[in-house]
Length: 68
Image (cartoon, rainbow, N blue to C red; front, side):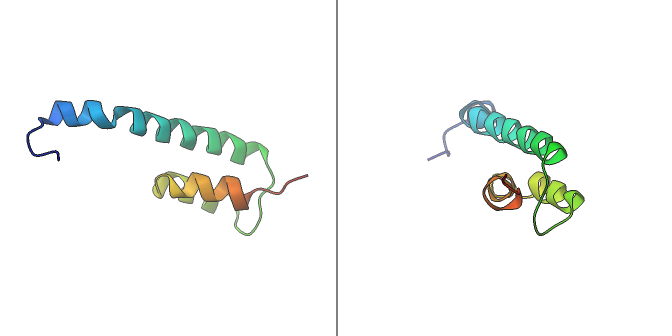
């Protein structure tokens, strides 16, 4: 699928996904700073959000926050 494409074309193809991932990470880190958390300390949630791509922020939003 990507064989005939140059590196620039591939980057243009994935740029929206990469941008959305970065925005989601920043959003989750801001939420982490302001929210109370479950199961792990905040520093560990920050490491998970940053290091696991899309999975970390989604897991944090679904399971890591204490809801009022």
